[in-house]
Length: 110
Image 1 (cartoon, rainbow, N blue to C red):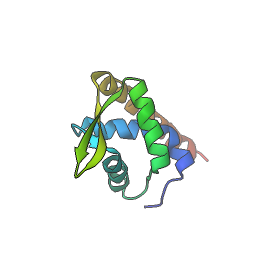
Image 2 (cartoon, one colour; image 1 turned 30 degrees about the horizontal axis):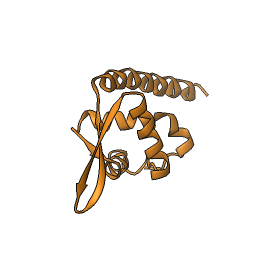
Image 3 (cartoon, rainbow, N blue to C red; image 1 turned 90 degrees about the vertical axis):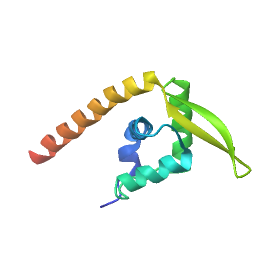
Image 4 (cartoon, rainbow, N blue to C red; image 1 turned 180 degrees about the vertical axis):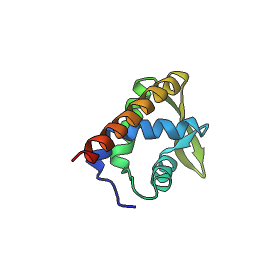
């Protein structure tokens, strides 16, 4: 699969992160980055420089929470989705699907 330009997918990253957290009780940053890459067949990648500001913003919005744990003498922050985040994910998912459908229709008419 072709790699998707980061600027093109930038607005969808929060929805992808919320999606991952709906199917995992908790994840840390590298797990999130790795799963986005794997589940998109390497089409979508997110850098640490993009990931952590999005995680912080989602936490500020009350969509996710975090807990710091020590693993092998290293502090690691784990993220979980909130009930509000789950509700918001469902809305955002529908928006992304509608956008995708509209783009496909538009591009097919050219």
